Length: 638
Image (cartoon, rainbow, N blue to C red; front, side):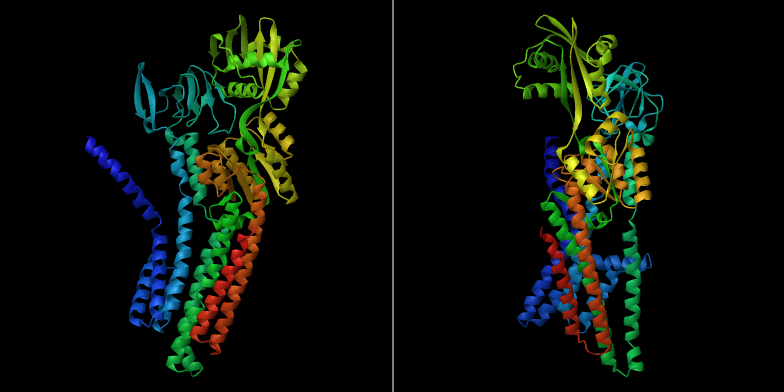
């Protein structure tokens, strides 16, 4: 057994290396093709022509393998023509008339750009596996009072599932026994845990924090809210953008046009213009070379990669040029609240104390008691107390954590109750700074009451505070003429308070993942191009369906994998920088396309006039490629 374990351990690195090689195989082939291209060029300079041709042939075979396979597959299986096929024919045509180097260069440039595109696309399809890792695989079912472990997929409607503290809830259902606090951030985006009791509904993928509960299954596994999130992400990612569909359609038309012209040139000039057969074939090969779209391909890829590198230096990670291109057309931007506009953690904002007592004594008592609670609000209060230099806390006695309500304890002979208003008593609470408490509550803050034997000792207000850069980011959106919308699973009061503080144009509250997706779709119908910014699992479907999805760098793995762009330092103001970079890149790409097409047209006209030789055609073709690459590299600055 031990030998088998050791053998498996030894195999793991090997399997990892094999998977890496498989994932980057196309890039490896392209680079190897470039290596043999360089070797052939050196051998040619040394007048070792036979060996040089052999090196070029290897470069053709290795570098052009994937593109030739793709082109032939489309031709045979789908009966469609593409640029890959045209590039291979152009390279073969160059070789037929003795220009091996030019043909190998054409293949290398095109295969390298294709390999980089494939690598980028592969990375965008990993979010589903990241989502699945968060879904429990097993559940504890109660059968005649006995616990039985079963697969989540085997759960049936009506089954009773036991969920212990700290476990993820494996199914959508209704609590029939017990009460607890549930972290629903994965589903609703709520930063505050939600108290759940009998007859309350719970969702698969959420976390049971501190109480054992029994849940009656209400939905089969393939209909749970969590499963719907996975389906929404998959469906949204499979949809092709309009620009991609246009490029695919243009590609076929372009190749057909070039092949028709080249085919005609193989015999028409001989009869119509009186050219010799040698001249006719020569001009046809020149046409195939000068019409190949290397410059067109280089018009986009170097500019895109340069802009992506520029963004990376500024803390903006683009997952591909297509997302960078689409960003310039954004008319509206939707932002999640929790963890995006706000920090995602509650912080103490206000402290109200009974007259005659100091804040230091009050915080000392509250922090001493709350230090024995794991609730996020308790942790925030203790953290606040420590920032006020209250570090020497006392161990309380008779601590009782009342799930969903608060905590009881005695300290230095005094009895204390800390928790929500109803836990302390509504009548007692109304007698203590009622107007101030209502004002704090209406502003979206959560109130924690502290009571002793004499009544209310004090109130602590907490709030998920707005990020420092959020207000600046919204201001820059306004300057750019971009409409901003906050979409959140939080309640209306909290949404209103955050919207007012950030000066955001519009807010939508109480949104579950399906609602967020529908809202983003509605915004796309209204504005055309819409960006979405989020950080949680619940934001993933909306990030996927948006024209461009932004994820916060500290967000969940699912959000980061699903998004098209990642803000490494959580700086929302960088979105405006990204939009500016996108507009600059699109200007340069348009310049490159116009220039490259103009050169192709001029070379084609010159070829018909018999003024362009093959070497001149290659120089013009490759020269235009180099120029558009250099123009694209300007995006590295700034």
